[in-house]
Image (cartoon, rainbow, N blue to C red; front, side):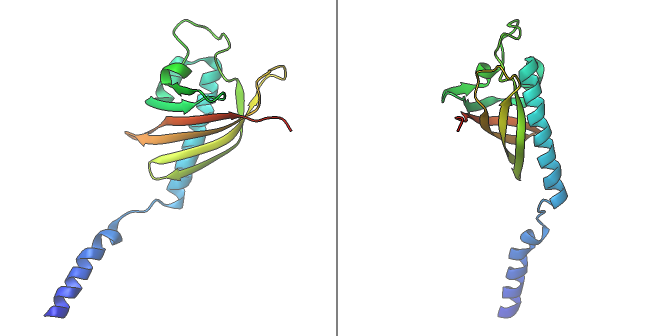
Length: 150
């Protein structure tokens, strides 16, 4: 009798672990590709100051650190209505992009190279954190750091 109770307890305890789904390699790769694509969409929307796209990509509760160490919110990084393309964007191309996914959280790291040779802006390193909410990825945090030339 004691053995039966122990066996039943063991089976009941282990059953949830047996039926929990772990992300497959394919699902992880799909999520990595999705956030890499979203990162490129962010860079393109930033360059063209596409407010609608930026509002979709960047979460309302976004909090980031700019290249000069300043804290920025969503309203700081999206150009105001009617401001035109007056130098507000980063104007960088993303290179060496890498994504890592941890369930509903993804981290993208990369290098931002100025698109113009005449730009006085330094090359950047960036880290972007995405969170999956309601079946879509949104940028919730970011950090940009200038790279000093060697």
